[in-house]
Image (tube, rainbow, N blue to C red; front, side, top):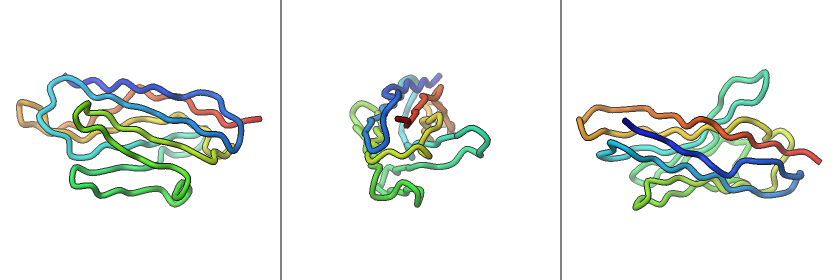
Length: 120
């Protein structure tokens, strides 16, 4: 059993900043990739950013230069620092972790989602 607990969403004005956190716990042997997706009303879920265990980082073009993903491997936690937020960043943000359990099976785990609203 693996749990992902997200925090840090909320309401922010355009141009503001927020930091999302996601802590993974449970039967985790190793983590391959940690990342963030988002889903806005009427749109498909999209990748925002992800970071692999070897340090490869990918960002959506729309957030490059504004968002930064990082991890604390000792805490199995991934962060998303969001700056210069725009109304179009409004969405539910989901943490996603690709991991190997202690039973050596691969698991693609999702957080419960946290709402980010950018509005004046």
